Length: 490
Ligand code: GLU
Ligand code: ZN
Image (cartoon, rainbow, N blue to C red):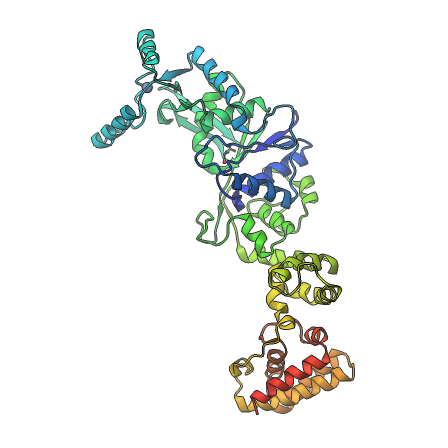
């Protein structure tokens, strides 16, 4: 049996971490099984639909390098893969259910249903929901309603007795009393649009889906879907509901925790490799210890059974660490193309960069690679090159535990060593040992000497390594900045 799985998002919002993880698990499972990965757009909720969400879906999957075997833009034998283009299919199958007695037309007006809701709420009756008023209309009643021009909905006849069970790969058997399934839910709305349940079940069946991997919040819909498969006389697929993605506090990941839309991570300079790798590990592991996986590796080694049963924790710090690790693996050329848009946006590099500007970026590549966590860090880390504003806040030069007097001496004598060594072209290790010796002589920490020099050169207490900063600025400019800062102390 060929594995066929799908990612079936509703374009009603930006792709977030949880949704993307669902897409990745489906994709990796299909690839590792030599099966097919299908993309289906569930866009029947026209009120919440947005073009922007759909475009964001395509952009995000493309950015992550996830391609689909069947779906929009590529087609396939079971298309169309966009639900709003399949309305006639749903209408036909819904009518079929009515003919078979498994579903029925309901002519209740919104006013009647509203009144029903109010009465139920007021009487605090245990029974909530549709009262099956139209389940047994006579032929005359039906015709009268039709003649009155009322457009009916189609509702599923849910059995009032018995239980429904479905099996989930991770959760085992899940059983619900049929009397607890919502009474006779709408399958087809009066405007001819299907509800999620009808369209989802029909499409999974017609598209030959073998395994359903989706968020655990869909478990409550499981029994209803099984009842629909039974009504149609179809075999349900294998279910694998995915545990939630939570923040560190154990609550479902949401904006309260930080960014959740992949687009926002992307804008900040996260790499697709890092997102793909880390998001996959939130709720899955190969052997409990291995951390680094490329997309190609996951396409081979992903195992469904290794999905964790308990919810996964999304740790922003851990993602930052992964991102840094992936940045370290980039070549100089790759770093330059990654940072270029950020440098342009900051106004450091022109829209069509000159050779001189590009040479600078190439010089920056290596020191940046060791220091960046996010690609956007390139801007603050290199700001000192493009902006020679001095730091006039004296306290910035003064290291912890130092005073102004001590800093003046440490700074002046340290700067002398650094500049002399640079002028003589000595390796930076020599500068470091000379500064260390000076620190001992003055009974101060090494940082008490380096901090004022660093602030003088880069206008920041956190910067690229000192010797790289000097190399980037050139000796002349470095000297000028140091002299300028020394004046502050004299
Ligand atoms: N359109 C649904 C969603 O966005 C699909 C759920 C499912 O996979 O069945 O979550
Ligand atoms: Zn009715």
